[in-house]
Image 1 (cartoon, one colour):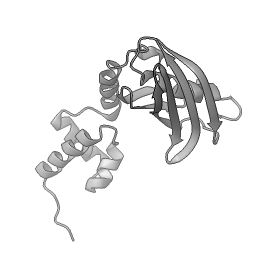
Image 2 (cartoon, one colour):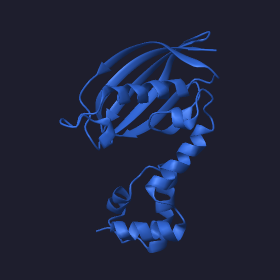
Image 3 (cartoon, helix red, strand yellow):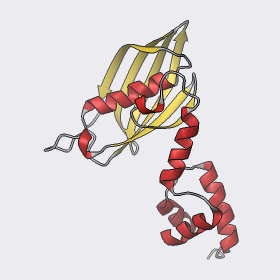
Amino acid sequence: MAKKMSKEERQLQLRKLIDDNPFVTDGKLAAHFAVSIQTIRLDRLKLGIPELRMRTKQVAEQVHQKVRSMVAHELVGELIEVELGHFATSVLEVTPEMVAEKSKVCSGDYIFSQANTLAAALIDAEIVLTGSARLRFRRSVYLNEKIVAHAFLARKKINKFLIKVVSKVGAEEVFVGKFVFVAR
């Protein structure tokens, strides 16, 4: 049986884990350290580490400062990382206003818009226009699911960009899009 870790050791490791992955939940941290969620919350409070929602917001604010092609409120979803000209990631939580009342299925408009605005955000230019898009919706997305979209630059030719976006719920692909953008 492994020796129980001291509070100080746990807090040091907790800070390192959150620094490495600011999107880790208190539940996953509690399971990792084999302690209660309340213990993790108390440790975070003592270390001055904000809750997940605030950490996500802080990361998003830092990331938005890099984006030239649009302002934060134009992006559909929460931008969590961007390396201009290379890749970007966003998260969209499906809320009641996004779904059909009866089926609770998310409208494809939101899934497309998340992918399209994310792809545009990774282009380092003032004006970015969608030229064309080739889309595949793999499965329905439902109320309260989180869509994580990853966009990456596949090819660039002068002022034209081919960007691929893969959106997932958990490990399951729900959407794939190939976009051609023109930048000015």
